[in-house]
Amino acid sequence: MEPKYRKFYVDFWRIKKSTIYGALALVFLTATIGGGGYWLWKNNWVIQPPTSEDAPANSARITSFQGDVRIVRVKTRKTERVIKETWVQAGDTIQTQTDGRAQVRMIDGSTLSIRPNSTVVIRDSKSLLGGTTVRVKLDDGQIRVKTEDQPETANNVVEVKESENRIYGQTDASFNLDKKTDRGEIRISRGLVKSSVDGVSTTIKENEYAQIKNGRVSGKEELLPPPILKAPAPSKQVISEGSSQSVGFTWERPPKGGDFKYHLQVSRSPFFVEDKIAINENLIGSGSFTAEGLRPGTYFWRVSATSGSGQTTEWSEPSRFTLIKSKRSTRIEAAEWSIEHLGGKLYRVSGSTNPGATVKIANRETFARSDGSFLLQISSSSKFVGVDIYDDEGNRGRYNLSLITGKATR
Image (cartoon, rainbow, N blue to C red):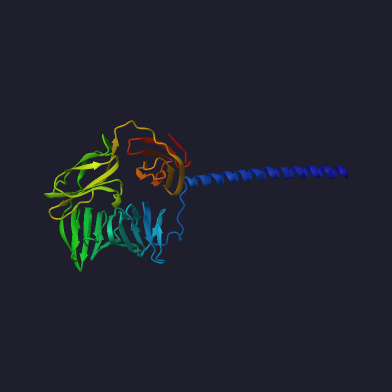
């Protein structure tokens, strides 16, 4: 009996051993698949659809944003700061601060772009019997609406003061409301808008401009483009021989509109916040201006024009130049890199460098604080981004930063 028992024991041990090997192989395979799936998810190869709880029915979505953007929720009256792509529904209010911008995808396929210092209320957002209704109210600031993908059954309306403005398909329109002057403006660069005030309708067509003032739509005329900036050229480095320098600015006037008065702003900030504006010169009668006493540093400048009829163009696209002292430059170092993935293509990059230095990543810029720290939110579809750092003395540094590992190489 004893040999038979031993044989049975040996056979049992062999069975258990093979089972263990199989279990280990299964665990390894599961871990590999799970780890690979996690890596794909972390690196945006897998897009997770929003749950119904995250995105209520008929809600619009904030698809991109910059700077300080906030949402006042209609149900709770609480204010949320936007830190990732999120939803907005009827009754919610979107507020952009001085450095804030947001882009909203509405349920009819239209795009709502909200400029800095603006307040917009989502009045309606619903689907019914195959059609859609989108209605927003501009309380202050400026918005732009594009309806390239809008279906024929869509009803898209923007409220500005007393007016209701129906936006048709294939339209690119901007609306402005200045509470200080109590005047609204409508600019149509493409398409068609029908504006109604107290039952009186006015059709505003492509390349037309109109005012909303004193309870009516008036002043309809040809839309004027903003001035074209000429000098200093974009990214121009101007050498300063002393502690301050005079800089000449020139621009091209709009092609039509008679005599113009120009408004020039030169700022230390690309957002032209009030406490960073170095030059704020209005009522310039020609296409040039010389600014005196600018100290070394990085500046941004823009120009708008006002015609004799009172139409004011939009600001030109800002241009940047750097005023540097004439001396040998040195390399700027940076350290303490940190990457936070906010979802999708959005990342928050932080680090440390020379206090006051300008940090530029993926066409976005910020300034290092007094302790040298900086924080910048960027959008990138690549795993690597270039980082440029420069200061008022002409010193520079360039790095190649991995958005996956957070490591930076020169």
